Length: 81
Image (tube, rainbow, N blue to C red; front, top):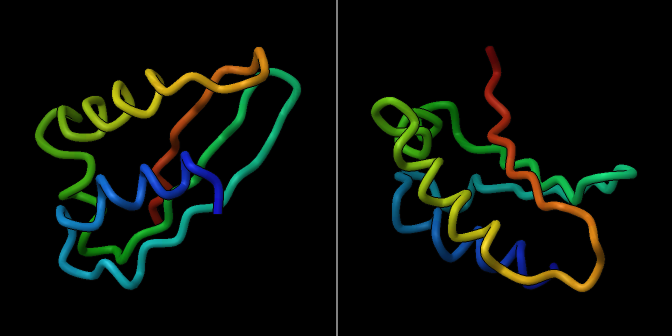
């Protein structure tokens, strides 16, 4: 688990009802380091928040972490819709 994975899990765990269901996967593309978050379906709304304010705040924190390469970080919440 990378430091970004740990950071995401530390931020999200207290916000959800099912912290054991948090799964973070990492995918690297040419331009991005993508982190996909899979949650219990009941917790997706909690992480997104009203008008996306919660996920936007989480993204601001995660995006502010310096990474060694020139790729940008992308945080994606996977929902089952």
